[in-house]
Length: 421
Image 1: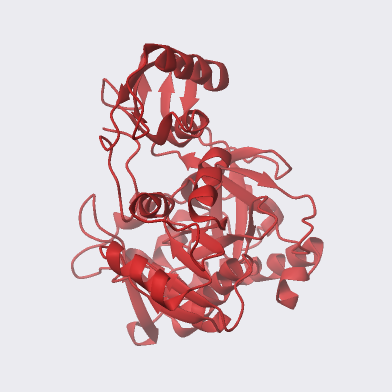
Image 2: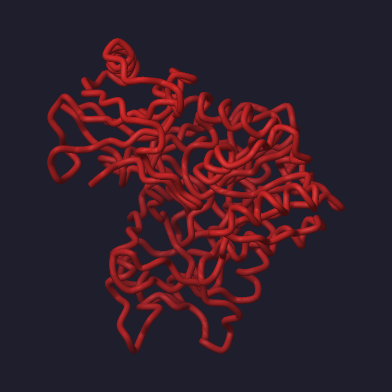
């Protein structure tokens, strides 16, 4: 653990307040996008009054991009100052580009190293990673392993046999992969007797779900911890320590975190057990800093002391607001459905697929849910009824449970789809 991670949180907030004043003045001076967006606010707003400033939505930044101006109206440095340019997948159109200066990149790697280091990784250990970083910000997260001093064994996705062979022959202490891929590899090989003692998952919700985590830990015979980032802000901003009680803010000093009501945008108090959408603000970013950026991650938060000694607040991702469905006024996260269903193991595999009957967020009950059986289980109306009753009791939603045979639902070497849109 670094000294920076032990700084009392009230002292950190005082440091962040000074950084925020400088960052806000920098935006007003350098960013045409924010000069227009913040017209009338001025630079006197402090971090304590940050909720007075408007939220930033990704589409509005994207809307300023043109072929001649790929970074839009929000590049705050000269192009010659950039040392790396990442991009998003562009699944909804052309990719979004994420430019970084040398300082930005160093801050990203520092925060990511803290986040992954929280799990117990130490110099000299061997770590197999499965991310094909390519143009994506995960590449900066991979740089963090060099910062930690571990022996990094990059294998990548799409090579499951090679991953299993590397685990067998190179005897790593840890593996880094998505929760979906971790579950898939358990089906492909006997991993309980391997050298792996830590499974570090990131890239999607799931690693913090108690039942799903328990299944992974049983399958791997190892401890599971998770990390989380958001491409536009940083690759691995949060990382879970061995207490497994939420992910600490590893990017402390670089990012300010808020909690809002996802429907109204109103600020919510940051306290133990509070939930809401995570909103993030850069504090020491140069190329394209973001102010009050909506992550669309719905989280639960904690501020109480952690026995590990890290003083940063902690979060656990409950799901993506983009995936959320509303069934007669009840918010339903597919990841929450999976968590309830996983409690019926070993009769079920833990894989689910929510199948909305209509387009859009609002749905009428019952909500169709396919639940995959375990390899030796046969369809059982009684089991389907029990799962439906449990989902109704826990999530307050009426569902129509369809039990499907083992192997019917998607396996993934990256992220699993939980909703069939």
